[in-house]
Length: 415
Image 1 (cartoon, rainbow, N blue to C red):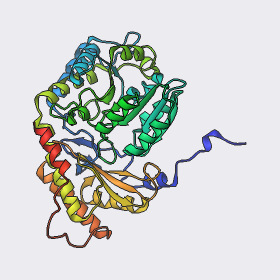
Image 2 (cartoon, one colour):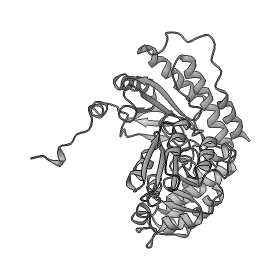
Image 3 (cartoon, one colour):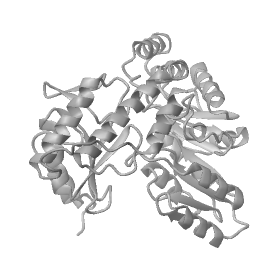
Image 4 (cartoon, rainbow, N blue to C red):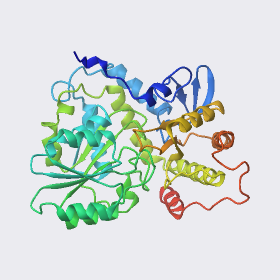
C-alpha cells in the first residue's frame, strides 16, 4: 500500500544538503555585511537587507521599546484582538508613503501576496509573469480565475494573450517590480500602457524595490516616474525595512474588501509589536537617508563591472541582486563551495528553482558592505572561477563600461 510519507526531496537537494557547509538552511550569524559560519568570519552576500537597517541601533531600539510596552506577541489575529495602534499607524504611514488611499499590514510578505486571492474569482483572468515570486504564483493558483502566464518581461507575448482574452472579463496583470533572482526590473511603462489599453488592473509586488528604487525609495513606479500606473501594491518588511511582515496598499474599497475576505490575514496571528515598530523606524530612515540607496547602487555598479571584466555572465541585472550564471547544478554547487572557501557566503539557485542547465549563484549587496568587502567578493569569484575553469586565467586589460541603465539608477537614487 502506498504511504503518503514516502515522498523524498529531489536528488539535487539531497546532494547540496549533505555534510559540510551548504547553501540551504545553513545557520549563520550575520550583521553589517559579515557573518559567522561555524566560528569563521565571512563576507555575507546572501542577505536581502539592502539598506543595512536590520542591525541599525534605531530600528533595534524601536523594537525593544515596543516589546517593553506591548509584550512579545499580540496572540490573536488582526480581525480579533490582534490589532494595536502600532498596526494602524504603520498602515497609515505606508499608504501615505506609497501614495495610496489605504494599506493592510500582514504577518509576512508571503501572506500579503496570498491575501490577493479573493480578488481572483470565477470568470476573471490573471496574466502573470513567469518569473514572479512563488507567493504570487500560489495566490493565483488558490483563486478561481483563469491563469494565463506570459514569458518573463515579454511584452509582445503578454499583448497577444490580452488581445485573445474575453474583452468583457475582469482582468489583472500581476508582476514583481524588481525580480528577486535575476535582479532586473519589470517593464512598467509598457505594462501600464497594456493595462490601460485592455482595461486590466496592474498589481505589482514591490518586495525588493520598495525602499530601494526611486528618489524617495517608493519603488518601481517612482523610478519610472509613473506614480499612478500601479493599481495595487504588495510588499514586505524583510528586505529594505530590516524587519518582517507584509503590506497591501491601494484603493480604500479594495483594502477594506481584503480585510474581511483574505484568509491569510484573517486566520493568522498578527505581526508582533517589535516587528511593527521596527518597520516604522525603518520607514523614517528610508525617507530621511537617501544616501543608503546611493551607496548600495554604487557598490552594485562596482560588482557588476568587476564580474563582467572577469568574464562572468550576470545577465541584465543593474541592482544589488546580482546573478552569476554558472550552468549545471553540480558545477554551480562546486562553485558555491569554492567561493565559500574564499570567505564569501552566497545563495545558490539550481533546477528546478531555475531551468535545467541554468543554475546560478546570487549575490545580494548591502549599503553596509565596505569597499574591502566588495574587493573580497570579486577576488573570491576570480580565484574560484579560475580554479574551476569558468573564466580566463587572467583578466582582460580593460574593464567594460556598465550598461547605461546602471548609471541611470545610481543617478536616480542620488536625487
